[in-house]
Image (cartoon, rainbow, N blue to C red; front, side):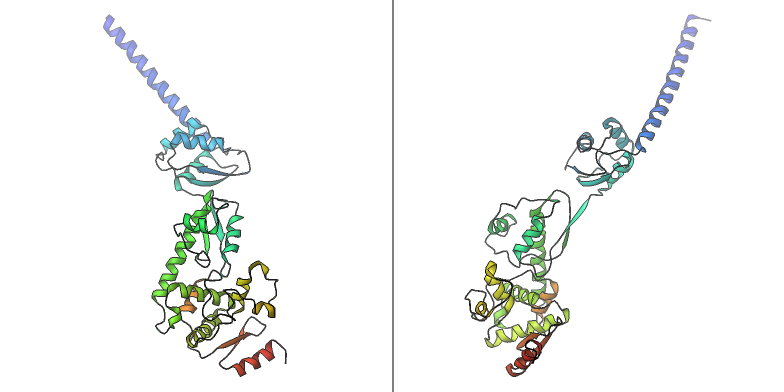
Amino acid sequence: MSVFTHLFSRARRVVVVLVVLVLVLGAAGGGILYVWANRPMPLAQKELDVTIRPRSSLRAVALQLNQAGVPVNRLLFEVLTRFARLSTALKSGNYAFETGITPYELLLKVARGDVNQYVVTIIEGWDFARMRAEIGQNGHLKHDTAAMSDAQLMTAIGAPGLLPEGRFFPDTYLFPGATSDLDIYRRAYRAAQQRLAEFWQARSPTLPAALAQPYDVLILASLVEKETGKSAERARVAAVFVNRLRIGMPLQTDPSVVYGLGTTFSGRLRKKDLTTDTPYNTYLHNGLPPTPIALPGAAALEAATHPAASPSLYFVARGDGSSEFSSTLTDHNRAVDRYQRGK
């Protein structure tokens, strides 16, 4: 055998050995990766909220997971993500992880953008102060408005100079953790503007001159919202107010008086309250109050823009949640005697 043939034979054996070694190592490495990717992880807590920041690199994602108490091996996580071809699919947001989740399950969750969603609910009939209190106590929001006045808040959401009462739409809003409360205010404000515009566009052509602007309808809708919670009666209540506006008769609505009294209201409306002069005392001042008194929902906006065809000028609570409507003062006084005075 020549020297050349001998060297070639040795080289070939070395190559074979190297190939076998690579295959063995690759198989071993793949096995290690598979076992690690499917092994449940004990988290620092039973449940963890983890925020993945926007525009984070793959390495940064692994680091943020570790810092939050998720014990992923950063090197193996990067290899797994690249092997699964998900390197560019990871999404920012707030995620909820429970102890026992596997690295592979975690990777798929972040790739899907399966963020943790929280809710804040704003109820029809709340005033703006009540809305601020509800948002302010939500533990999943960042409270960037905590030190802001109402005027500063309106400026921050892009509505400078506008009074906030009635300008936010009552609804349930979903959001990922660590969202700024300004985002909720902006969304509720935009929703209210959009819904008001829709109802105004479709309004009845018979509305009186006192309802010449969308804001007038918003004020009326807030009165309807506070006067009744019965869906069947909203349009009839709106008709009473519209009829009074048409003939210049005071609206005489108690919820507006209560709103005007503010923190001085004792919890029970008394005769002296009805003679206390505030801009919202609709017994002393004709026409609409100067602003809405609450957050009206869609049903109240519908009633304000499409009041019932009714001659009623009065209504009184029956005591069961419904109202008695009357067209004359005589009939109204009889209803008051029956339902309020027990005569």
